[in-house]
Length: 418
Image 1 (cartoon, rainbow, N blue to C red):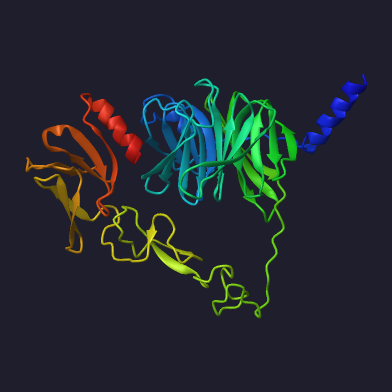
Image 2 (cartoon, rainbow, N blue to C red; image 1 turned 90 degrees about the horizontal axis):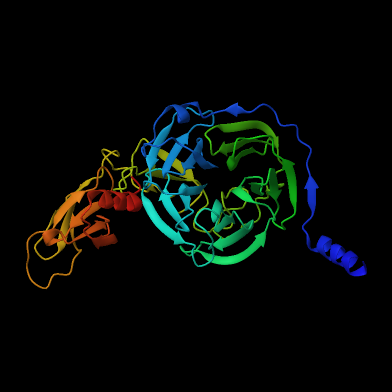
């Protein structure tokens, strides 16, 4: 009995502090009418597997590889297909980057949220294993940290992605059967599963809410309003409905700002009370950047953003000289030595070597992929195909030419995003 007692005391000392919250769940608003009444690109009914907050609404992913974007009220639905039959189980948004978790492949695909352009892939198979349907089930991203929730073990893995590839920093157990995780602007990591919703602080202490009855809750996200200490809480169910609960209580961290004009922390000659970021000497006032929707390095003079950064945010550039930001501004042709010649809107041109040819052969075939800022370059005799960035000449991906056109189309989608 003594040893049992000591074991219980030890377990309590090692367990993060828990606060059980009393919250009366209101009748939710169903925002999935348009989602359930349309057929997504995959051709299968949209079964939401996770949800995340964007600057203008929400984004959802499905078990069939579809991605849907819509407003907080369910209006303005648009959909695109990442890959047919892809088992997408998690989605997160950070700094206009879209992170999509593929459960079976143990991969995270990263896309530009505004252009849908493919950026990179994070392979998690070195850290997360298990059966195809009981693996990574949730994803959250905050600054340079990516959180991955493992369904069966209830483990949360934390990765540093600042270098452009994941590096595991720590992992910890929630003790529940995880169906979703989400990072919110109140500074908490929310974890859902086993009939509860938990708000985890940085020290892994948490506040726990008992979930109301749901068909099959698969995704959670919060749009936080710190001025009212409330949030709109979204829960996506695998069987279809997406619910929004308004006035969910949150507690935001207290922010302190200096009003002194006598301190210049970054020594850029502008006092902290007048500097938009007194920790960065490269910038002291808001900078205007121009939208580059077609990724041709030219910006639109009518679509701008003002940010406190000396570096343009993703999807924006420093110039405003694009005459048509809906169409990439270049043309390209092949040569007999495996090179391509790209001519830009300003009349300049560049030659890039795509295939290494020892002797002169027939001309490579070059086409712009749909309306994207990528080129599809087919080698002489059609033995290989490459996806090329026309502005740098970088070969984004290359493979042998498959016999099946559907395989080729699916490969393009996995690389380019549509």
